[in-house]
Amino acid sequence: MNWRGLGLSTVLAAGVALPAGAAPDVLHGEQVYARCQACHALASDRVGPRHCGLIGRRAGSVPGFGYSQAMKHSKLTWDEKTLDRFLAKPLQMVPGSSMTYDGVPDPKDRADLIAYLKQAGQSSACR
Image (cartoon, rainbow, N blue to C red; front, top):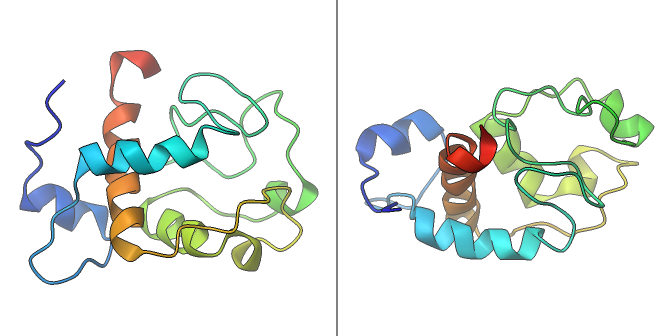
């Protein structure tokens, strides 16, 4: 699959702050996602919930997944902006969450990861 075809409209739709002239790199985002795979998968629940259908989904709402009370009651809906904030500092954004990962500090890594999650959510793996 060729992920390099993302243009400026994808960057603008993402709503993620990037350095001037930088566009999200979905291939790099897939590499960043490798960090997430210790606990998450696209199409199945693991230690963490599945990521298929993440964009637009209410936090704490995958049926049958054992979320923390903090995540269930966070009132977040996952979009590019909430994901960017959450991925930067998960435990600050949702104190009491059972997610133990410290976050993705680099804004470009987060933008690329979010672009990958958006693209992967439309893939055959998520249908």
